[in-house]
Length: 399
Image (cartoon, rainbow, N blue to C red; front, side, top):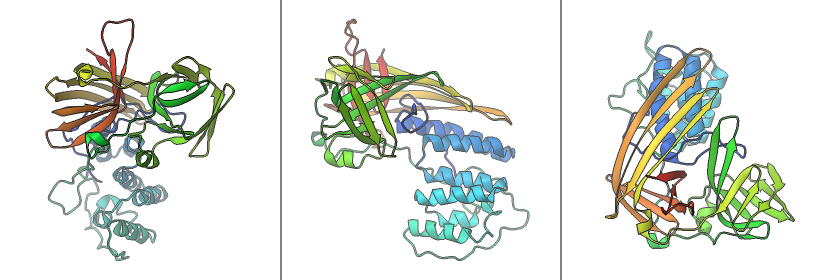
């Protein structure tokens, strides 16, 4: 198995899990990664205890949070191999290589995969990983592991490796070449019953007791995007999240999603907002000066389901001198038919911040830059502006 050690990464944003049109997922990659960091030690312990059912559940949670990380699929294959489920192990290995897994050496030497390595299908997995690494594919089979060698690994250990395996880096929002290069969205407005521009959506899910919070961008060309990271033609074309095309006829809006599904419902339009498909959509305006962002903000979520729960609490302080600090905690509880396990993690970070229009850019002490969409979300009945700040998938409340 491969490791996700406990790096000092950002716990920043509200974590909700899931994907697809009926999901309640938040998009904050750093927060999801922090949840994975909390899960991995629990998963290792479950493997060491030979509680493979619980290890499988934890690994599937990690996959749910980071579905495009091939390492999680690789580790699921290790668990299935240890459990004697060859078919499931090869399904996970095929998914891992399809997502770009490129470490052929770990495939050939990891003792957790000893049970499936003699299978004729294994050579094709090694070839795929080798191609991903840019090398010449080979069907050569490694020597068998020594008799009696333990298949229980510290997370991420490769049998002969002395150095710790470095986990995939925490995902970050794309870097902008320069603050001046940031493309804004078109101004948000209602054209009768048709929305155009950037809208903030909230929707309550009774099954989980969770409030979905998401940005929708209704582009002038009739396309719609969930949680875009930018608004230029190139950024929208490269959007890998949920997207589709929308049409409004009378008071009915129909969205045809890129996965082939369709959602249709009545638009309940107001001057700068509307209701649709159990969601409330509010038109977004940008901050007008950097001084409006200065302050301390706090966010967090509590989400539960039959398989466990996630609780996050996180803060960010944007100082007038251009510096920022942020910290947070996460706790994870996983429940299966075999056992209940729990764990948690903490993080701190600091650096400098810059604002332009709809974008907030954070650069930490290591030079890592995160750019995300930001805007105020205000209650006009209060004297404070703004009451809340949205950034990179999270709605923060001013303290």
